[in-house]
Image (cartoon, rainbow, N blue to C red):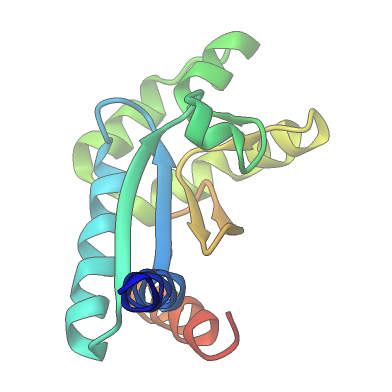
Amino acid sequence: MLYFVICDNVLQFFEWWKLMHVVIVGPNPPCIRCRRILKLLREIRSEEGLDMEITHVFAGSDESEKYGRIVDSHVFLDSLGIDTSELDKLFEKRDFKGIDKWLAPYVEEARKRGIMLTPVVVVNGKVKTVCVVPEKEELRKIVKEEAAYG
């Protein structure tokens, strides 16, 4: 009887182990950029039939600290005394490419300080993207590569 219990637990472990774990680290509550990434990942999971667990965790939480020092983009910009009114307008327009372009110089500044800016996409414990909203096909490539080689 013990043999069957152990085998069952081992099978459950291997089922969990082969499951792809995708984490989006971002602000609380999730911003439009995080929500966009979550939506794209759910679509990809459905279209590709992938065994993929998708979660959102908050920057600064114990869970997010596993992946490095991650700070909400607005919090970082505020700490530098940067006027974000233009960025806020891009958020209102939901201009993801414009937001990414506007933030690009600050991503490098954060990197020099050992900080990653949100949103951060992590697949099976590996940071894949920082402070961008990847196009759907780029996300698809990331998760398919991890499914093949993870």
